Image (tube, rainbow, N blue to C red; front, side, top):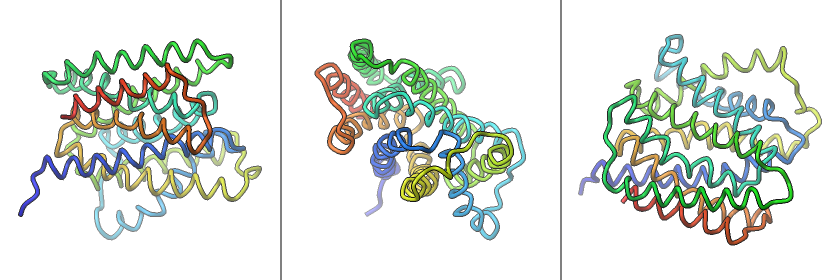
Amino acid sequence: MQTSPSNSGYFFAAGAVLIWSGFVLVARMGGTSALNAFDITALRFGVASLVLLPLWLFWKRVPLFNKTMLSLALTGGIGYSTVVYFAFKHAPAAHGAVLISGLLPFFVPLMAFILLHEPLRRNLRIALPIIALGMICLGVDIFSRSENTLPGDLLLITSSLIWALYTILAKRSGFGAWETAIGSALLSALIFLPVYILWLPKAILLAPVKDIMLQGIYQGLIVAVIAMLFYMAAMTRLGPARTGACMALVPALAGIGASLILGEDLNGWLVSGLLATSTGAWLGAR
């Protein structure tokens, strides 16, 4: 029995959702460690390039030095990574759970409409106001906290916007999942790592080995390679708008993880925000 592209697309989307739920938690762990955002970005692309370089050499010789691949490397690669890792220095994981993937159903269809002239589907028009309600609940939580998380929250919103732009650029590029993962990661490494080594501040020598290993393996292998392939495979089968809506299922899973694993408090406003964004995601991806 053959699996339809839609069904296999939801399988890949589910894999990406699980990995990115863990990404929120692991990135926050990195944010509270001795590592800085540049260290974690370097670990991400350093490990990813070690894994992907043999594939580029002996399997898929993706062209790296062109405007299309450069746009993917600067958005979904370097731009997204540095912004989101800086964000988790200042904002809790539960906020990241809502603001990164929770805003994608806003940003991705908007950019798909602007750049690809893709109309909004009817169920997304129902889902987006519900997700907006979740954003309002999160806003109440942000401004009711004693600590100032607003700088980190603004960076989280920016990272979601950058990822939405990357999603549309990747769709429009015509590259497949492997080509996009290999090309964008390798070019990101070629651009970022020399700059990091020569000029950027480093704290990697002050961090425990376990923190370096955790960030290197999870960010560089599981997120940069495996999740990227799952995400691109889902997007080619479901389209950018529906895939973006699926990704908003991350808030519920990551929010639960933030409480159980990181010990973060989930008050009523934050729980309402998590539930609203997840409900909106289900409606949008139905």
